[in-house]
Every structure is written in structure tokens, then in C-alpha cells.
Length: 172
Image (cartoon, rainbow, N blue to C red; front, side):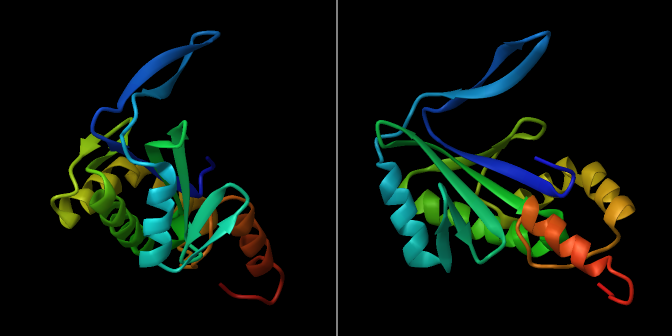
């Protein structure tokens, strides 16, 4: 995850985040448990509800949010939503829509290491919790790249877009 991206995990009941030692004094978040819902059912529900396509092993929703579905023996364990800060407000709204689609298949909560768990009961609380979590990163993004508004995916897509607008004579 680079400066241009943010992410949110969606965890079903029974799946918990745990800290694991990855060596040299570093830790990472891993997830234990799984739901009784097939991961493929989650993918199908998203495909039916929202404009999306597959790109390698991830689902791309509305050309702005990457959805990584994880499972164990095809039982859904988590969905990771990854968006670009260049499409931040719109992307967060889409993340909430995706979360609600998944929540219709299996009850989930949003999780991010800094903010902890957030219920999907209120779109405004969901939105504000994530905005608060990524506020410093968003300000750093604006300081580095400018106040860009573009519907792009994070990573290579964003950097290709940014290189294109940085060429002499081109404006964002």
C-alpha cells in the first residue's frame, strides 16, 4: 500500500484480527476464523449488484475500488477494499455500498488496525471513521501530489495517471 491508497477489511462474525510476529521486531495483522458462506457467493453478489470486472485475482468495482476476497477452503474469511485517495470521497461511498452488498450475504464489520471495528449501521459513522483514520495520510497525499480528483485505481494506475498529467503543458 502506497501513499495514494487506503484500505478497509470486512470481517464476518467469528473472524478476529490477531497480531503476529514477522521477525526483526515487526508485527503484522493476520485473521483467524471463517464464515459458513462460500467466498464465491460473495463475489457473485458483488457482480450482480455493482459494475465490476476481474483483474487477475481481484475484483475491480466501478474502476475505482479493488476487492480482494479471502477464504479458507472457499469459505469466506475477509474482503479487503482498496481505494485511491485521488477518488477518496466517492470511493468511500462505494466502499460502503460494497460493504452493504456483502453484509446481505453474511453479517460483516469494517476493520482497520488503527480504527478497530466499525459497524455498518450508519453510513455517516462508517465514512467519518475512515476519514479520521486516514486524515494525515490524505493530507500527505495532497501535499505530495496536489488536490487531484480522478477515478483511478491505486498503485500503477494512479502513478501512470499522475505521470500523464505531470507532462509539460498538461493540466490535472
